[in-house]
Length: 230
Image (cartoon, rainbow, N blue to C red; front, side, top):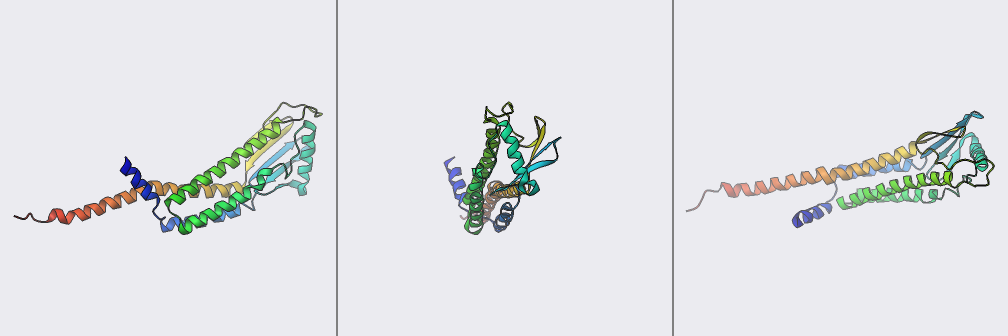
């Protein structure tokens, strides 16, 4: 068992294959594109709003339809049910998400240039953590908005969680919430990094073991074919 672990730790220090370095470098492109594309879109429709209201959430800001008039209208509606105002200051997570994406891009380029298998595994773990934590914070924010209602608001609603993914009916509004291209770009990056790491840990390891066994067999073959001496 000790020898197996020692060989595995030695494998982690091996350099990456050339093709995987190229793939990692190319994966930075969708990560950069995620800065300028919306991550999520939340839409609201009701009889009095037949054209709907919508919010686009970016990595660094929020925008809304009709020249940002939708956000003002949504905040007016939220005021009547006692929900906190939605603005850039309230969405404080948008302060660190751009930095997190930039750090991931730098770590990926470093791994592509001088990294080994260990650095690739670290990159996959960090990427998975950032994606999971960001999604968890997004769900928590929606939960917090719908469950911390002002009890003195003109209209009383039972605490609720707005739609996270899909469609949900709240009072006379139908709310839809879906990921956008920014999330798709980040998903491509996450899938690519984890896929390359998994390939190295599974098939890369298998290939190395087979090569080592073949080398040992080739080295032992001449010795076994020598005729015995008297």
